[in-house]
Length: 295
Image (cartoon, rainbow, N blue to C red; front, side, top):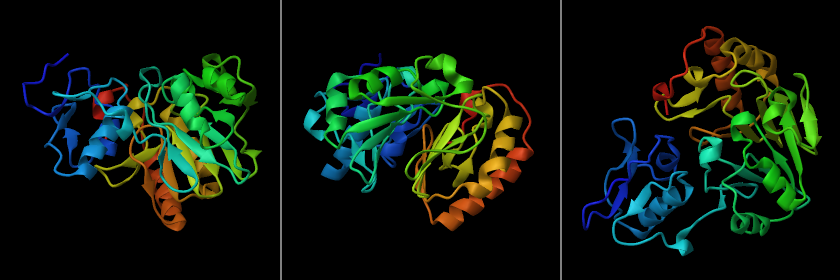
């Protein structure tokens, strides 16, 4: 692990896997340099100090560090509210490929967890302060590692698609086929094979799209993209999923497992998804290459 020079302040140690989580939370302070995250400059304000703490508490390898002091637990911002309905869980897990996870508030006051953070009893208790969690929704196999444990802790139902069932064989609710299903009032599950055989999009209230790894917002292209270079199952099936579903997807917030979050008017999101559908149809299989991600 990299040892920071005395007085260096904030730095990124050599466990960094270039997952992009820290850069999402501290733009302008952390950037990609040479295939990994690096601190661009030290914070100049309390607000910037808090952004670096958010990045540090989310980082799955705990690589965002300070040379002279430990992280201040009082500056842990998670769960971080994105609006009145959705919170970012933070505390990303090395067992879910550093994926982001979310809490979705329902009108009843109950919550759903979409994918999972690292497992911790303290974190579970913290998330429950927002309300009773009734369901844990897994978008696909890569993000399933802690699903059963959180579901059991909350007394919640665990959801996964049959295509990825071997990653959560004791799931309580199994989605099947490719037909859209309303799994709760206002919450639709769209089976979306492509990234994996059992990938699923969850769309709530025609406002929030939890896309897992099926597509994401890219800062480098300033658009919605598919991870064509990290498609484990079939890019052709992903194109078919988009073609089948695009006209029925209505949302303002794009909330992926990897890549940036974005909010746009629903009509603009719909047009971008339609354009993405055409671009994806032209793609062909390629070897998995994490270094080619367009964050």
